Image 1 (spheres, one colour):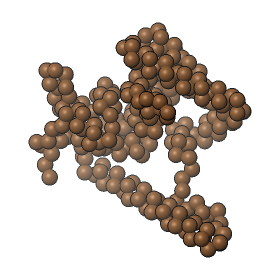
Image 2: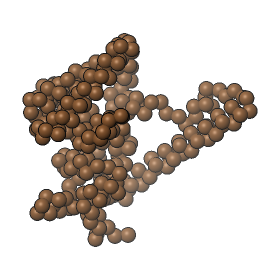
Image 3: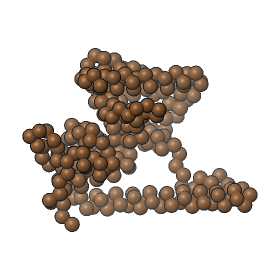
Image 4: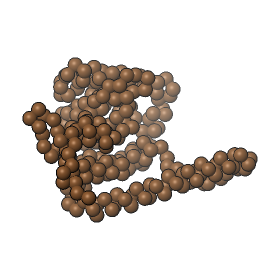
Length: 257
């Protein structure tokens, strides 16, 4: 199958790939995915090679790689087919894991219906721990996650409630900055980001590189993006996560070591 004559506008590609146009623009700004051409009106178009590269970006993202790491992998792999074969192996392994999880749920239902007990080992076959914790463990190590959990637990119920309220307040302020068209390096925006770093530091204190990586995760991982762009019980505010990501990079390079 030839991809030579394929071309999609940024909106169409975003819809087909299940991501946002802002994510594609963010990938462009990082040099991770460039459009095949840009029209005089500034509209971006993507051809067959770009579609293949985006597929690989999304596959690597699902493996838990950060955007910098993805760029390094893609720059070091010039042959697409062998790289896709590696991704296929991972997808097959994930399919087997989900199939095992389904069998475990079936066994649990049968045990409950028959009044039988299941061992803990059998009850959790195929199950992963908290997916956020797994990603954090991969990126920052067991000790950092365990220390973070201890600090959050030490806050107590009232402290955790205040922590949540502060996060919602920061997110609302960032949305207001975005709506007002303020630059990511502006004083008001950077004040909000300073609050965000202080909020993160209640459980874990990220340095420059880690804070930049956290911001990239807000854009590349839909679970984190939704916390800012699709907050529960509130109206959608597209672009806040990407805006925060860019502002975090400014704050990190200016104020963190």
